[in-house]
Image (cartoon, rainbow, N blue to C red; front, side):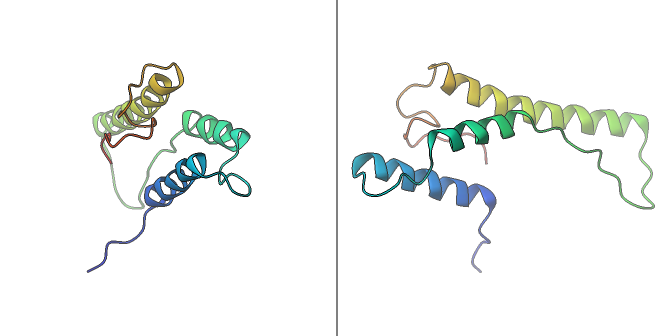
Length: 104
């Protein structure tokens, strides 16, 4: 069975195409600098919505645990972006065109 293409796969493919453009710039770049900035701002500005399901009761503890997990995940994304933006990423680290990856 073929795995479905995810949004992450699409973003990775676009970034791969953009990196290839750096090596052989022909035509317009796949991703402009303003689009990169908008993408980063969109990622760090994500505010999760409360997940509710009809008929499902959740305790206050469950809700708090879920909310904390979502916040931690979003903070991890913002931290990964910050490390690269601040120049802390080494060659081979995510975002520097290397092969190392964070969790998917």
